[in-house]
Image (cartoon, helix red, strand yellow):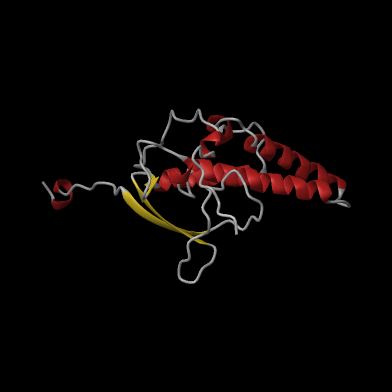
Length: 178
């Protein structure tokens, strides 16, 4: 038996995440009720999380709540994508003077993207649309490449029947009046 055959590896259950926080000024479905963002190395918009077994440190995995979800969780990213799509739709509605062919293509792309973002369950959100826009082709290509690179990774299937209501925290922290 070779050295590589006797050596076993085990995936880690702890990870740390730093990401720039969203720059959206409007409170949204992805708001977790925190009074302020943590400061990290002088960054006022930085977000730092320690994730243990898929839950932010300081939260219980046995009682999943919105505040225990990572900023990079499926629900938070879906909520953020919904905000982005809505912003694009609002911008498109205010635009005038676009060429007719370009206008039609943009309208079809926005309609397809809006239908995806407005899905009521995560399963509907992830479902492959019948019309593929340029951005959805890029997404499909990225998924294909990720599956190739992460060939040993087992996809998480069968838990897609939830909606963005999982981000509504029943015990949302009260904000102190200033």
